[in-house]
Length: 153
Image (cartoon, rainbow, N blue to C red):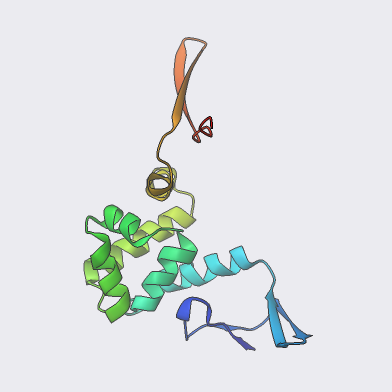
């Protein structure tokens, strides 16, 4: 078995699904289907008994949802500093623990309204300006938001 300590987690062990290789610098572990493993760990954390630790919250936020502290704060209705404090001290309020579990589970299971809200929180930070294209087809308008075009130099 391999002790998987990614993101500071100390309670995850891989039974299989990995390969150990010798390198000039020591042993290296290659995980098969890292995205699938990440989702499985996050789902296990969302379903575990007891309150999430700060490291577990951070793992779900970063690895599972690709959110910054301010983005998760916006989803939860707090500032990013509150999220940072929870992660650092490990004192996660019960309401935040429960809400994060619901958000992650819905996001991972493809519940479209939740997935869209999380995706919006991710992109809000990265994109400054976007082009909105609106098309009419068969009497219905549909919007499309495009990545920003490179500015002309």
